[in-house]
Length: 97
Image 1 (cartoon, rainbow, N blue to C red):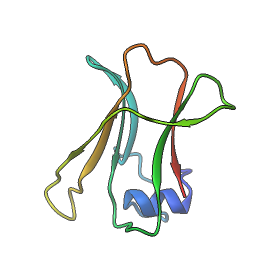
Image 2: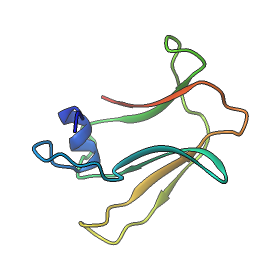
Image 3: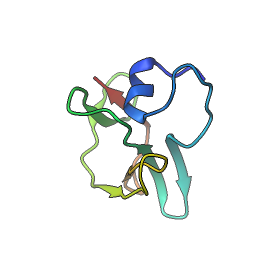
Image 4: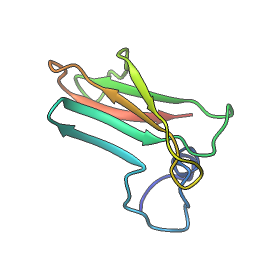
């Protein structure tokens, strides 16, 4: 599926299985642009930061609010959802370290 192993670890997906599921979604709906990802089994040993940029050189941490949407257990993990302001222009990415 092209995902780096560290991202697979954070999302709680299997790096040996191609999965096109919704573990990481950057999209648009009636409320605007959003980033949504599952909180996998990763603990405090990694950090996940949503970043935005007007160009592809000057990335900054997303400063808006995020929401944790509770899941139903191991097969349905919690999701992090961040909504970008309506006037946001440019690019968005998920930085995992």
